[in-house]
Image (cartoon, rainbow over all chains, first blue to last red; front, side, top):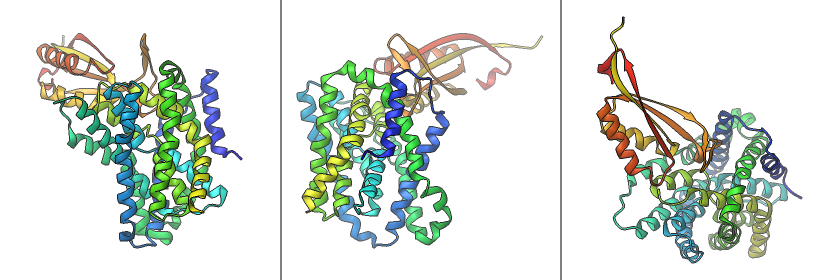
Length: 311
Length: 101
């Protein structure tokens, strides 16, 4: 059965297609995204407080390496689709980085299916945001000689940007305060989570719906990237999860993270780092094609893949 | 009659991703005061409605000497205009405390 939050997304897309005047106030969008990032971080942090941190080092290292490797693997394929080098680097960076909301939808899908997963998985999300972007910038730089890269600024914007700061902050607060210490804020940060996610999905539906004309404009290349890359990357992610000895749910989440594409951190970072790349192309693929594909078809598929691999 | 002094208002409408870079470059070229607002709009090449992070547009207003405004505009035109959505315009304005600009 389809998850309720997916229908909120569909409602947003529908509103766009029929040109409804529905808009979520920008301040609400900001608030919802801050809430989701903090809540996901907190939940992971509470689980972190229950286990020795050193034991997680291999997972963190593998997640970083996976995020960093994805753009290098995608780049030649994108070039073969006749994307220019800057465009290929930018698209590759979007897929190397991750989508927090896709992760959130996957965790609710796992909970609904009764499949257990490593509850500290938010840590993987937090460390997978930046490496793909760095790899994308490296790829773009390799393609054009001598162009200056402001690495300090890029590192600041990515590592201290809203997403990583709130995820890491939530993880730290949850880890320090533990289950008992965070109990007083459960009523805000734990119980309403799915309702808030639903509202955010409505907004994402509106934004993704607005990208549909671009998907049409770029045509086959965007569809090919947006639909073919996620299952391939999911397979790579699932194999990494398997090698790490993760649970079935953990393998499914690692697959989902590998398959997901960033549409918040990466677009802003790549816009500055690779100005000549066509921003519309990356966003059309990441948000117009891959995000809907992942939440409707991908996540159930990756769960079945994880089940088959861990059987 | 109040004592008024001529200055140039330079308005730069650009992708929000450029905000930090534009402010940095303007300061380096002698701008002392500016204000920034978020706007949305459209042109023949598409709409920027500002519904989310990667789609935001800012309007940077700088009041400065004409020569500073020219230098900033020339730099923006050469550095950012080829790859980003940028629009600029100038206006002659009068201020009461010229030393602030």
